[in-house]
Image (cartoon, rainbow, N blue to C red; front, top):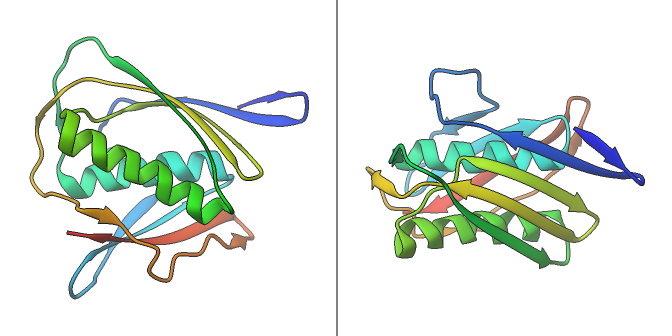
Length: 153
């Protein structure tokens, strides 16, 4: 983590290793998929959300050079930023056959900037249609932040 002019800039590069320590867990849900995610700050929580979503979908990546992609958005709150970010990842998986496993994220108030890299997909097991707002909150806890995200499948 770098602190630049009072702004937190999280630089996080991660190759998917689903046996590694994770900060997310799948929750039982009758009609959808649900995921609980937690982290000390918002930026790493967004990254854990992406990792958890890709794990639920069973993403398998090609081992070749990464394609770079940048997202910049402003929304009304952190919940909308999270939904916007994850929705972009769903779109790239479904329409561009890409998944991202390297992230550099800045969350500043109501603005999100993500620089990410990822290779083409080999395959994925399950299709996520949409990221929902269903009961989505990002409360501050004694450990940092936590969210329960529901995915339409």
